Length: 306
Ligand SMILES: Cc1ncc(COP(=O)(O)O)c(C=O)c1O
Figure 1 (cartoon, helix red, strand yellow):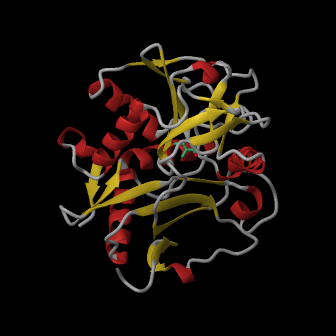
Figure 2 (cartoon, rainbow, N blue to C red):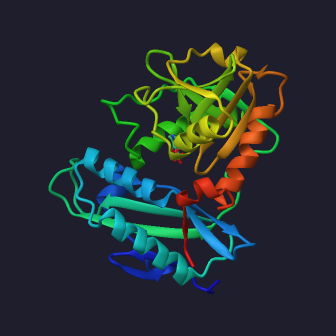
């Protein structure tokens, strides 16, 4: 690894310390940016760093920019190339996190999305666990409702929308929980502060559909593929009531940051026997093999850096 950490800013790779924006920047003042969170996993046997589902992340970024009406200044192919160049320049030989952001770079006062210049930047840092995924999370259902599609669409990963997540997460932490699950305005289960939700009930794996104000997670898709193809489980996308969380057999959150995070209790009620459920444990182990490029049939999801 090089001594200096590099980032991508204004069309070039520069030291992270030089990648600075003004306090006048529109995105800083109004949250007018969209971003991605991508992980890279070091595989010591292969001496290789694998970027997990890189293309899918940039395709979703493209979707977020379309929703916001931004013109993303790069194609998905270009973004994949920029990313590999950046990670190579940093020379990382460990697990990493990548944060590409597309933002309104204008230094003007006034809230709007159209006819303003859009910039693109990305940083890349060494990164381990985001939340404790070993012992099972204590989760609380939040009093903060998930933002609705015609407020700030959750399917776009909009920077400003994360204040909604931050309200829910802080409330959970201050109340002694590890994480929050938010409900929709109608009172259905939506998602965690930065994770999708799955429950195992009646031998089926159930998750809220994409129109329940969730970010359509790439890990969510990964879990659905693995559960169907490897564990022969039926996947059901349907509306989930709050109290189904209290009676299901297993519950877990998933996301790029959280990975597979089993839930041991919801609103002080144990999930199943409490602790980490057997399916969640098996899924977690398999997921780690997949992301480190150890499973041939899912190797196409892993982009080698070196
Ligand atoms: C609100 C929200 N939901 C779900 C997810 C999970 O998405 P993914 O699996 O694509 O990381 C994230 C993570 O970025 C998120 O921020």
